[in-house]
Image (cartoon, rainbow, N blue to C red; front, top):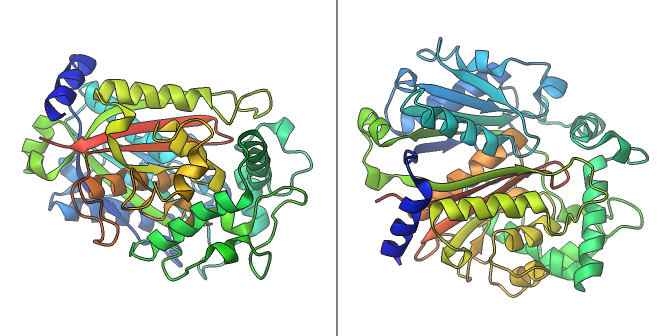
Length: 416
């Protein structure tokens, strides 16, 4: 198989430079307490540089992602904050926003700069600060801030816009595919079980059973009256940051990093569907399938080659749809793929061994970067032993923004 993959990949890439993940670093997800936004940005940059013992000045280009920062933290021009880290001033830095796909978009931004010849090394940073200095949240303000990333016509009458929109997606998925609430709840149960062993996960100290995930009691309630979405079907409100150093072959030489210690971003795709959810087939989102197909084509691999994945499970139904988008489950079979144990760390394709957004956490601007970073750790054998896939081959990631509107997909393999 390796020879076939390399031949296919070489045809797909043409004259494009090979891009590697030279380093990945993240905070624990949950609460950053009194850290200010400038402190968060600098900590992310300094942390990933320390991981391979290089100064920030060794990095040629950069991009940074945050989503609710203007509303929640009253701070813009994040690229200027990047430039405050010694060594980055005067370099091509930019901030990107693509809703919850902003982290993935930051990686694509750096890749584009490297492919354009603006440098050989680059830095992608993502973060979100959603809680105050005491770790508390303003639920109404957060709901309002997130609601801005939906179509104005689909906000009316919805107190919390995105839980409401995805509760409708969950209802439609269940009705279309004959799936029960219990099937989708099993996704959350598996992810909480995974998060127990991820030292960076927000919910690592919480475990749930299928019975708890189904029972309307305590914190678990129906989020929208008349719709099936429950608290345990939802991702977390999360503080956190993540950073990644990317490099070409020449960049690795400059950094002093061996290719054998890296993961290659062998393929990537990005696509955007109309923002309005109504009128689209969100159960089979065109943009997501197009982006994933492009990533596979560029990498020269097929879905069957993938046995590690991180998908954007902002709600359990997206864990099911994500398994279908990456091609490991047939259309309409994603929930059953999870329920049958095929997505477990020792399953056919280990999906969201990190705990996913539901249990690892969802610091929006950092989410896409953390998905790629965790997949890289799996391919390098650096995941916790309880979660480490025995023989990782190829990894896929699927990062979305809005009501399954923006899609960023990547295919990774160990560098050789």
